[in-house]
Length: 100
Ligand SMILES: [Zn+2]
Image 1 (cartoon, protein in one colour):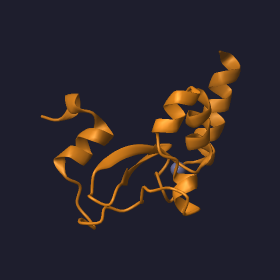
Image 2: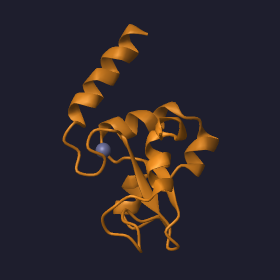
Image 3: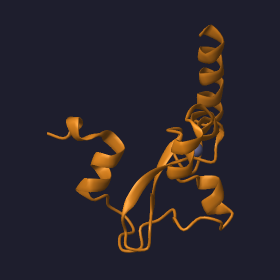
Image 4: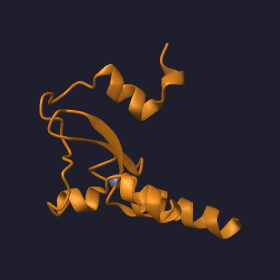
């Protein structure tokens, strides 16, 4: 467990300035209709998370690395909305419980 903690601290440090997730290890990605899901980021933290989930789950969670390589149907930006987050997107990021 101690080794896991040390690894986590290291990858979080490495990913702090990530341009894709700002150090969260995850990022919302979108399909062409603007539906969003959480993807594992291409940075160390995202890789670390992806390594923890089992194979079945990994198949269902998009990978920013694949998106950047053009091998994924998902895209980094919403097709319809450039700036502000919709309520659904905020909930997807922060969880329903944090919404007032
Ligand atoms: Zn990242």
